Image (tube, rainbow, N blue to C red; front, side, top):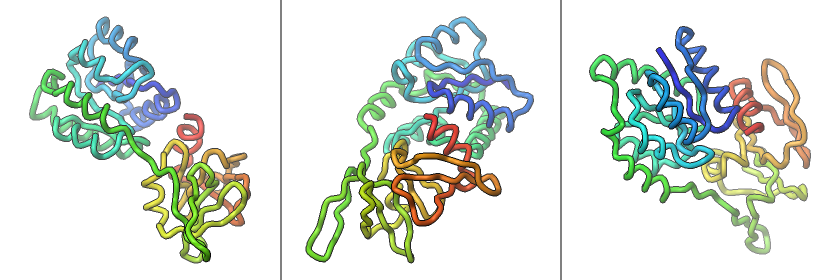
Length: 257
């Protein structure tokens, strides 16, 4: 099986290539490209692969600019950070997709889907897709993230800006936001609800008890059993650790993104 990766972030390229190599040891990764321009040129001058993993947002435009110029004789698996509304457009057009941050099991499931489809159909041709419809939906559905919380105090309500929060954590089953001035704020939301509303480029769910702002991180150290120890400013009373399953994603892709 021959694979092409189109992804403009180098850490994401490397992570995708590693996952593919682990899942398909005999597969040939033909190339890893990072822009619309070089992808068009490469596809014009090389045999098309069996599968293309294609990031939606590239350094010089959306990947649909590639598909408007080239009709690859390949299965297309999109990767995207767009929200669930945009994802409906992919589902409606029978295109497989992976929602970022990419996990190994997502790639495994997508490859399995390709294997199943290849038994029933010939290669998917891009002319079957409504490219303009997808482009319009994606352009209209940029993600919107929370900018502030309303915090209740004894004498009233106060605005707490998200950018001023160093980390969120659990304390006796209560959700606390610690700001950069080392002030604690009680929030009437759980960590799952909070993480869903935050920009994943700025905040990371390190474990079940903590969400950390990238600007609060001072240092990351190896810890026991493949975990990572995160040191922040302000300092948390408890150790902030990244679970082993998220360590590679946190260090190589999120911090280095």
